[in-house]
Image 1 (cartoon, rainbow, N blue to C red):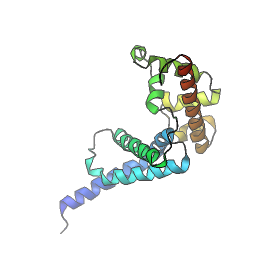
Image 2: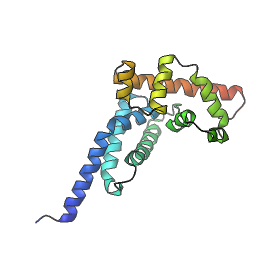
Image 3: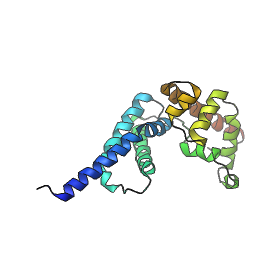
Length: 183
């Protein structure tokens, strides 16, 4: 006779793995936002899956699965950066989302100058790059939907978003330096 605890655990682990696979393109997109090298991002995605599988018992159904996985993925990206010695300047998802979020509380943020710089830098992007950024961060579309809207391939969307984030990060840092703001 099979132990019900083992069966329940196996089912839980399988359900977590199925959720990961269901959301893998979104998870990959988040990883690419922090690690624009496709090969390294795919390695980080695999490491994230292994960690999620190993820690699947810690996930409680009914809570936010993507938030839980994104946290694991962020740590994996940071580990990858430490191992490789690369510390590329990339704009974080939180920075872009905070800019694109609406609401009066945005200007009360202690990083108001950074947000203002980001607003100015967004206007310097090409119209298509700006549209891709808006679709991804303001409207939360996955890369596959952005590709359909813009009539691009999914890989082209990832490349365009990566380039746009790099340009935004560089522009923001230059703007802040020119104003004497410590970065």
